[in-house]
Structures are given as structure tokens and as C-alpha cells.
Length: 172
Image (cartoon, rainbow, N blue to C red; front, side):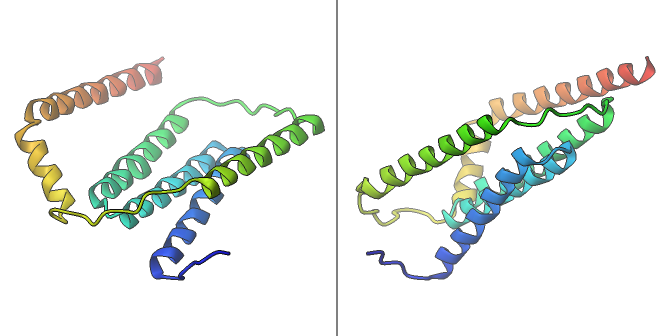
């Protein structure tokens, strides 16, 4: 029924999929926010691995640099700079847990059926340069120089504003 060749790419896809699914489940299951951020970073790293499998090295690099690195660190700093009170979480009721499980299984069934019945077109061989990063860099620094520089100025202003707001909150 299934004609699967166990290649290195298949094994890498399976391992990365397991990492992403486990990280996502832990993200919504854990109660401490720092642990949630670490689980989310695992999902981001798994997604970067998927981009490498798709031969999109630049997107994988940006995924690791921006999301797994910067966003996770930013969230941890945000957590550390704010005051939190220990509050008792209300336990989920058994009816809600049952409905959530039925909904999740239904979604899985619908997605499984849709994937199994869809006919995908045959992929065409790649025509052109294999160096995606070089092509993106050339386009970024020739055709999009002004938006790139404006974005860097905007991010610098946002960073300075965040520091001013954090310092003002710490002084009070």
C-alpha cells in the first residue's frame, strides 16, 4: 500500500517532524512561561531544518537567527522584566478535555483524508542557479536597498524606544 524509500531525507524529515510536534505540544502543555519559550524555540529550530531539506538555506538561516534566537531571547527578557504573581490555574473540566480530544482527532482525520486523496503534480526539475542565498543577497542590495535601510532605521528606533520604556518602568 505504501511505497516508502527510507532515505536520509525521509529520516531527517521524520525526526524534524517529531521535534516540531513535541515542541508544539509542550508549548501548550507547560505552565512556566520560560519552558514554553524553550519549547517554541525547538519548534523554530525544527522548522529551520525543514527549510534546509527544501534547499532554502537563506530562509533556514533567517529562521534560526530571527525566530529561534531573537524572538526567544526577547520573550525571555520580557518575562524577566515584568512582575508576575503566582496565580492558581483553574483545572480543565473533564467535558472540556473530552471535547478537545474529539476535536483534535476529528481535525487529524480530516487532514489525513485530505492528504491521502489529493493528487499532487509531478515536480519539475529545478532550472537555474542553486545558490539561493546569493540571488536573494543580490536582489536585496540592488533592487531593495532603500526599504532595507528604512527597515534597519525603524528597528533601531523601536529598540531605543523599548530601552527607554523599560528604563522608565524600572525607575518607578
